[in-house]
Image (cartoon, rainbow, N blue to C red; front, side, top):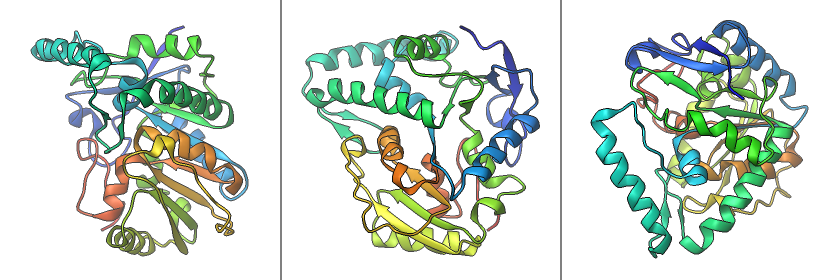
Length: 295
């Protein structure tokens, strides 16, 4: 199965996404639809679920793809082909290497853990695909950034019986997009928010200040491991607030966290690195196109 349409993402946030991604950023789609129509559908679905029903939304990009599918050559990036070949070779050698698997988020898993955790992650994704949505980095862009998995992702989903269709797929950039575009207030102002990430007291204070400045009514935290979110077990017995939204940043392990948030019966958004913007308003994400809607 191949998604037949491409939707231009240029106006997904601030500035030009096309410019940030080397001239164009187009997301694959099941539908012949405009960006505005598509993101409005997503926005409405999230708003309708807030505080009412469980809706987990998991972002998948290079980190998740490499963990599940392994590194692949990016033949479109000729200047990095040798580097890619060396990286793929090094990864294959990891099968006999005692070093831990490390991610950019900071997760670390031993080689003994990885095989089982891959199986568990597939099960988490399968669950989320049925109960919520997958925000996949499945696009073409002028930088050819992380396009090497485009041809194998859907085949991987089919092989593992992961639902993937127009009702549960959105582009990777949509998740943060609704938090920074016009109308972002609907998700933050007057809302009770649970933040689930690896934190410390200083980080929690900064994130709280930012969300309160944006208009949040209440901000609570669930502190998870910074290095092993895929193995984290949540205990929500003391979380009795009726939250409007959960903001999650846990790397590839976010799927495990999102799944366990079901008892809260609300929207659970995997916002990834955007959490850095909430901690430090000077931060920018994804080529600078994602930043706080106000400073």
